[in-house]
Length: 56
View 1 (tube, helix red, strand yellow):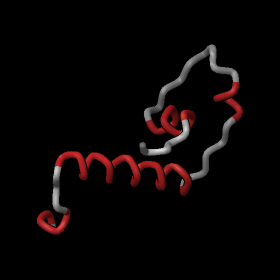
View 2 (cartoon, rainbow, N blue to C red):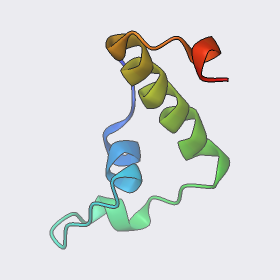
View 3 (cartoon, helix red, strand yellow):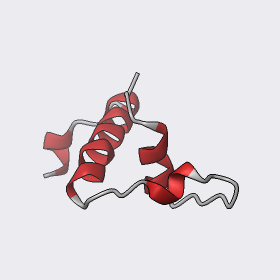
View 4 (cartoon, helix red, strand yellow):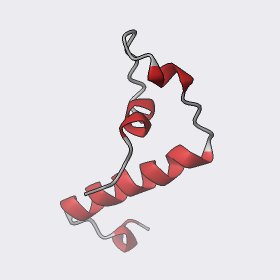
């Protein structure tokens, strides 16, 4: 489980819903989404069996 909050996923995917009243009040600074982006991309790297040392 990645433990990424629902609204963080919505912000990262740039998903907007006009019926989502709460989402309009949530302010996300630039550093916070980075943690979740790193967590998600790290999960994909693990699932795909990629060795990051081979890429450098």
